[in-house]
Image (cartoon, rainbow, N blue to C red; front, side, top):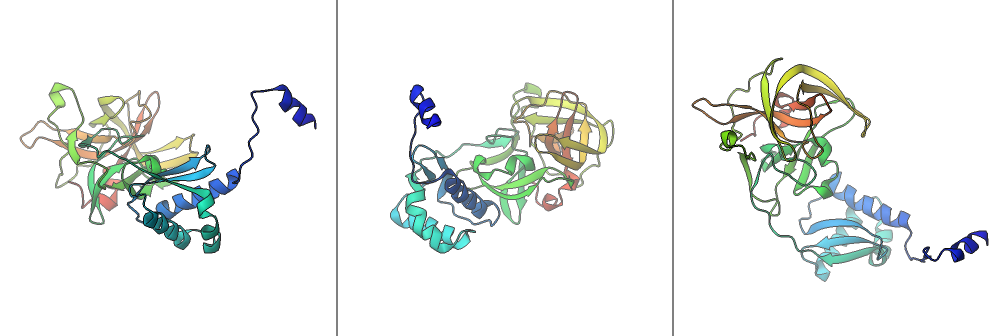
Length: 296
């Protein structure tokens, strides 16, 4: 009674009775995410999903929103969900809201350009699939990445912070031309090197970030550890440089050795992991064994 009296005195509070509990919506959303993230189910017709609070449902956006494709999606969920098939079949019409998606195909995506929340490192192949490498912590939420996340290395006490995104028809055309606007560097591209040089203290490296652009820095330490308090994660085997002023969105930036010799190009040396007011940390490419034979 006391609560109702308070509510009556405040006209800005609206009580709305809904059919689905928020916990039910979260459970369905998490099972859909797990289907694509953990179980690696491939279903290229989906463009996004999320909790639709207004309609009290989980919103599913499909490129082809036909009845048959809605049924295909539901069948996938029944087969690959941690929930029982009977529960999914019984509740999918009341819990899922399908909508038609319209996505314009992207143009060229250059090394060092934005991939939404972070920066594209450089093109690689993984298990014969074309795509790109970026920082692993950027790829822990596949719904925010334009492409299919196939590999993530970012966990407490692991070596390195990197991952692979497979390109699809909506990713755009990937290039290794560096996304740099300075005249002296505009022609640089990340090139494949026969033998990757080992990094050493005092080596000058550059990075090309979607937010802060092109910068050069000097390596201070080769085998070092970084603690990321936002994720409560400690990452081993990172390289530390003296570059300050890294911003959110720069993660995943290509770190490279620019050359002006007869071969030209920029030799990829890793991807930016993070930084603070005094330093930049990146994953040495030599600690990315998955891609050592697939860079191009």
